[in-house]
Length: 208
Ligand code: GRF
Image (tube, rainbow, N blue to C red):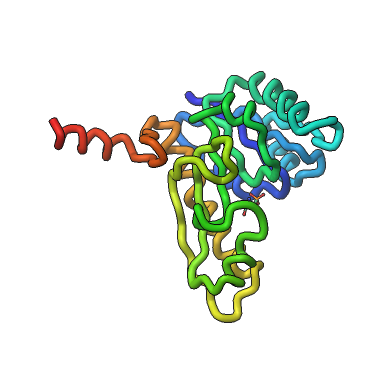
C-alpha cells in the first residue's frame, strides 16, 4: 500500500475524484488544508478520512507555514503528496522535501498560463483550446515534469466559468489516473519528461 496525503484549499472535487476512484494499493491517509473552512474537509471527514487544517494566516511567514505543514504531512508517512486545488505557492524547502513524490493539478495546458485566472487568460489570447496539466512539483511554479494533459475546446461565447466546468470534468478523469500510475510504479522521470515505465522498458529493449 502507498500512503497518499491530499492537500486542498476549497471544495475539493478533485480530492473527491481520487477517493471515489478506489485506486488499488492507494491508502488515502489524510486530507489537509490551509483553509479551515474548505468544504472538502467535511466531505472527507464524513468518509472516515483524517483531516486537519493549518490556517496560513496564523503564520508569520510562508516558510513558517510550510515547515508546519511539512511536519503535519510527514506524520502520515506519505509516499505521495497530491496538491488538488491547493492554492498556495510553496517554498523551495517544501518542494525539495517532497521532490519526485508530490504532484499538482493545474488548470491550463502548461507551459502556457502558469499562475491564476488561466481560463480567462486563454480566452483573452484567443486560444481555441484549454485544458489541464498534472505535473511533478518543483521549486519553479507550475513547471515540473508533466505526467498528463487533457484538452477541451474553447467555444465562441464561452465565459471563463464555462471553460472551467469543461476542464474540471477532464481533471476528474486525469488526476485519479495519475495517482494510480504513481502508485503502481509506472511513472519514470527522465529529465523534464515523464514516461510510463512499460514504455521505458520497451524502448530499453529496443536499444538492447
Ligand atoms: C481546479 O480547477 C484546479 O485545477 C484548480 O483549482 C480547482 C480546484 O477545484 N487549481 P477543487 O477544489 O478540486 O474542486
